[in-house]
Image 1 (tube, rainbow, N blue to C red):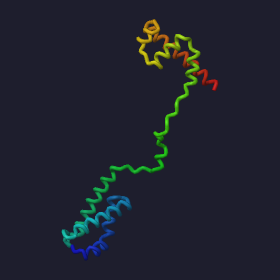
Image 2: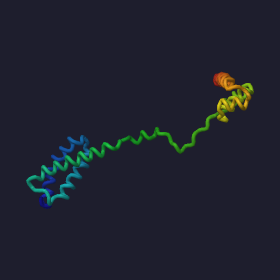
Image 3: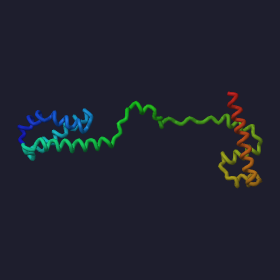
Image 4: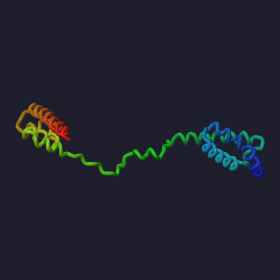
Length: 163
């Protein structure tokens, strides 16, 4: 095809190629984008296109460009920027929990129960290490921990009822 005939070819076939792309893309803006790339590709290959097969060649380019466009488009997720408002900011330092209630409840525990809780949860000792340190059996450590947790739970729940 000669370069002088390209403008007339473009004017004559632009709407029919656009309608074809609209059927494939189902989106006006996408069809316009693909249409532009189709006619750029046709213009770049003018010397290889024969006048008799120019329209079929253009449809084939339109089909291929549209399929490539849709394939690439499917790789991306379109998200409304407003939805990013609900994402928490990770740069904000975490709020320190208030251990005031727990500390006051620990103060109310009998010394042996408080010691078992202290060694288990704050010093991260095993039952065996706690039993060695306190001079009691492992079963006694388990029993003291169960009792201490039950009493702590009761004290904390009573304290929150007063709030």
